[in-house]
Amino acid sequence: MISSDKIKKAAAYLIPLLILIIFTLILTSGFFLKKTFEAGTTIPQTLEKLELIIVGESWGEAEVMVDSLQHQWDTLAPYLQISTTESDIKDFSKSITSLKGYIRGEELGSALAELGLLNYIWEQFEY
Image 1: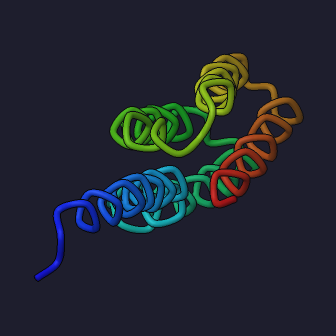
Image 2: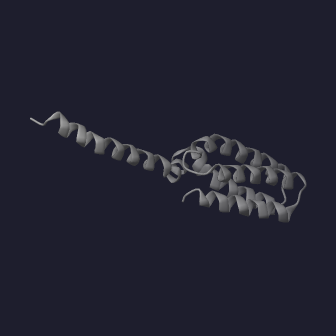
């Protein structure tokens, strides 16, 4: 029979090891979460469509599309908070808000620049 001292010693090593493995998996789950949730797969598509709409200067359609982007982001952001920093979440949210303002003001160059920043921040969530 295995003595209780050996069981205690094994548990003293295995339990912390399992906890570290679980937390590591949770903290690196950003890529998985982006690909699993519907919003995670539609945000890049929305950004691409939004760029085409802005280049075409269809400002009314762009406002509808950026509201859709905001809704998708609001759905996904709570799940990404597990695996990314708060500042990254806030940066993406601020960029969406700025983009809304540029679209309302019909500022083509600024809207495209903000859209480029959104694409960059989105790509950084994978790492």
